Structure formats: structure tokens, C-alpha cells
Image (cartoon, rainbow, N blue to C red; front, side, top):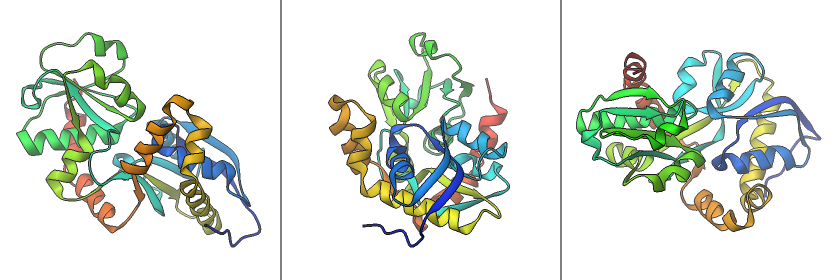
Length: 264
């Protein structure tokens, strides 16, 4: 059981992505004994990075793919949202074979999934399709031949049944690179009070130790076992050296430039 070595830690603001994979983190921040947060900023993954850039928070769970753009950020805590194989948290959906894709619509709220898709398509098939922001989810129902869709989190699970093919991007990455993957990581602004960072890690530990309670608090009863099973079996929360290594490989892959220079 985690123990807090401080009398009380109060952090002014923390931004965390409001999607199922982060439920243990949210629970820990809300309920860990002797830990308080002035304001928990629950937002989309992309918006969490924006809140950090805008100075609204000094601690945030952000998409791993966006960390190189956060020039005042340090990676902190021993935790992340990661996977060591297929996770169903980042999917490429289509009705056609991957090598036949001409357009790939990417969810702006899931930048790490988009980076994984571009990496896998380029590495496995030498493919550089047209990448288009998915600004209108109605596009999911106006599919043309050669269209693919990159979705993350709950959106991926919700849309999976609409398509004939589903590629699990974390599974593909792990198979190609023989490395795990970190999809979202914790960052702190340089100069952040070390007690705030240590207090956050304590809260995250508490949340992970109470994953079932975290799910029970936030999801309907009919989905409880499914989500708990997903978090327990598909998601790996330890930000170890292998995930650090995988992140550096993704950051140096040139994928970001491919996505930016081919926006549709």
C-alpha cells in the first residue's frame, strides 16, 4: 500500500486526459489521503498539452507524441499510459487492406495514435497516404474506397464495429520494434516544486492500487468488468527504461514531419 511521507501536499492545477485509460490516475488525484489539488483540469489529450503550453498548469498527462513541442517540460513520475502489445486504445480502422489506403483521417485528439499509424504504414508497407484531420465524425459514415481512420481511446472502441478491418497500432508497433509503447506521459514545467511532483506520484500510485474502485466510480455497471479488464490486461502503466527508449525512437522517426507536410 502506498504511503504518503508528507503531512499534506496541495497542488494548484493538474491537467489529465478524461478517457478510460486515465481513470486510475484521476481517482488517485481525487481520493489519495493527504493529497489535494486546487483544480483538476479534465480535458482531451491534445487539450492537456495546450493547457501546459498556455501556462494553465505545471503538471499534465499529455500525448507522448507531443512532448518534443513542450520545450519547458520534464518527464516525471514512474507512470504513463502504455502498452506492451495490442491494447485497443489506438486503432486504424478501414474496409480495405492497409496497403490500399489512400486517405487516412486522423483524430486531432489522439496525436500519439496518429504518429503510430504513420510509423507503421511507412515501416511495414512504405506507404505515405494523404493524412486528413477528422474534424467531423460524420465522415465515419461517408467512407470511400481507400479510406482509413485513426482513433484513440473510447472513440476507437465505439467505432470498431463500423469497419471490416481493425489494426491495433500499439500491437503493430511492439511487433515491429520489439519494444513497448508509451501513449501518454506525465510532464512537469521546469522549476516545479519537487514536493508537488512527489505528491503527484504518490496520488498516482494510490489510484493504480485502487483501479477497480476507479472504474466503479466512473463507468456504468454493465461496462465495469470490460473496462476493468482492459485497464488490468491491456494497459501497462509503468514508465520504465524500455518505454523511454521506445519514445526516443518514435520522436526521431520523422513521422511528425510526414504528418505535417501531408495534411490533406
